[in-house]
Length: 609
Image (cartoon, rainbow, N blue to C red; front, side):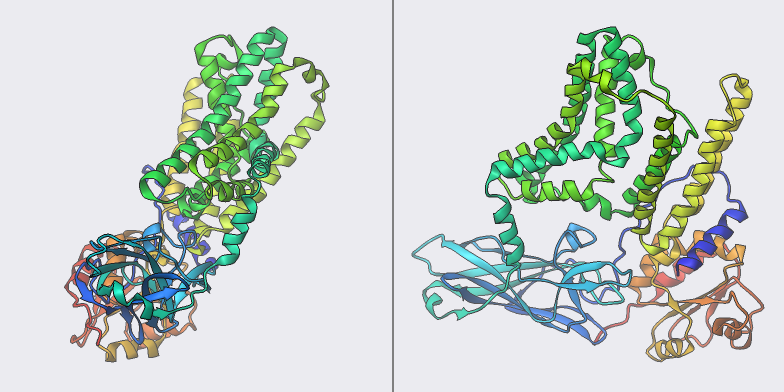
């Protein structure tokens, strides 16, 4: 699939797209076929089926139960192992996809829901996902009865989340179950055993004792951020400015250094504030790794590292603003120092994921005051070396003298940054990897144009022409390579005549896309038709079997079928088989998105028995 994507992207750039502003499109996980009423708030008694797809199903029932001395509500799930729920927000596509079970009652107060130990599932993209599957139980403890005189009452249990199989994800759902509770009979309630993820809880307990030791570790983690390769591109600017300041005025040097430290602390203060807001208003915590699960964020960070590597190679230069290199007492100069400190903290994030994740794991298990202190301790650790260096100018004399070694070291760091960028790109979904790689190469070429095709003495007209051309080329490449591909939005199946015939016998709609890697018009169809999110959503909602018929080679099964079975001379051609129609609808061209969408909307959603 990766080779196919790379080849397709290469053909797209050769086609020469029109010049438009490039944009980043974040490919969210599209929900699958709707088999039950989504977002249903209808209340059902005791138990109900939550989801079904073909032979896979999952249901839930509620009953009073006990775990030791704790009484409460047991939500018992039962179903096939193939159909599973997302167990943790850390591995779910979004917090809304995670299985959530909440209890409400006018007669009882409930504690925090206790979920069982999860299992690990490898999805089709190769990622590890924490899931619940088959038979498992969720427990909600009863904290107290509101009216001791009234010992019976209704309890509503709301279950929400998203269910997936190994090949498809159904639409997110919400279902409310209701049961009656007789508090006087609690001594006869069923005793259950619930295996929880205790090892992780024990680890958190060990880390929290003693707290001062964890704060020291957070401080050390902050110190370690200064040696992260991602920060090194701005270090030469920082050192040059500090040296210049020390030669002019010791007081100004110290003040500007503290302003730089303030910028670092501001970044971590914003993180601490976000953690407070999430805990107080949303009952959750700031997951440091969530942004790295966003393909767009990862792609942007990888491209930023490529730019920083080019800076280290000397392809272009960063001009220090006059407010930094000139009069340091100006207000703008202090603001620039704060901004540079903030930038240094941001640049540390791609290379320091492990360090920051460990520190945040401890902080988020603590009360808000302790958590905020721990997060700020990371910032203080990162800022301390700069505060010391600017407060004691004598230390600057011990810095190594500039020379060729510094330039070689700087260029070597550029290769380190490229390695980190490649690591991030590899972590992207397979359908996006090729596009980001191609765009990174074109972006590097554009930066090379910007930095080396003009010089200080170049005439303004020529300088504008070169740099506008570089920007235009980068925008074209962004429009060509970065948006989500049809392979990512639509679950295409490889061409197989048996699968097609089986679907037709089951009165299931079938969409066949005949394409080839060498076909430029086919790439246009990908962009204008199948990259349309509305069409992709309809294909999933209507349970259409989407077939990608690759005719790149003459001996491929799809190539033979195109000529002998369907009597078509070449590609691109798309066919939609509608139940009840003898012949498929055919589109031979590139401008049929509107008509295809109209036909898909007419399809009836198959009923599941």
